[in-house]
Image (cartoon, rainbow, N blue to C red; front, side):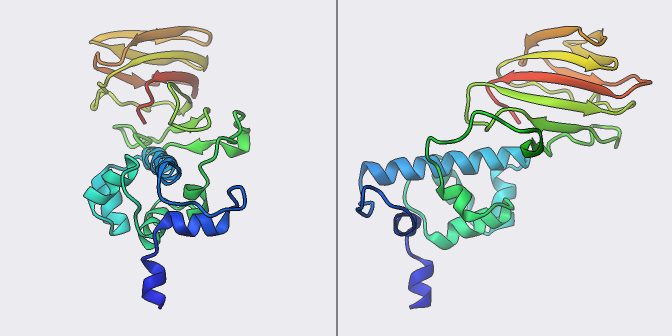
Length: 219
């Protein structure tokens, strides 16, 4: 009996824990909507942690193929599979199953999620990247960057689809786009196509605090 419980589809358990007009969720469009939301939550959290599908698969013990299907909202995976994914993402499984439209548009300072990707740059000096938008499922991503003197990504330029806008709040921030360097002071801003190789550096002597807007979300 215990093994059968572990293999119960996740949406059946979600239906047992939530009321849907007094009736249990049945197979059909409702299930597809729930799993689509679960997939978006997993993809968002995976990107926040800076993980590839392969890395999340290794952490969770769930195959890359199944993870890919779940993120695309395909199928109805076993509850224990979602539990392993949630554990690998350091999040309660309830956070994956709660996919309703009542997410607050407000992000309080103490609720910001830290992005792990590229935190140490290429010099071993760590910067902080905090997500200012509620999730990565929107059309744009806004982050606050706090970079100490010496932080640099010069040896690993970024290049990806989309556009970016950045504004320096404090300090001096060097932004190199396509081989051309621009040194921004507090109050200066820059915008460019993300497909052009670009990197960042804080030449010092003060820490940098900047706001960056990226569309579509990349991290």
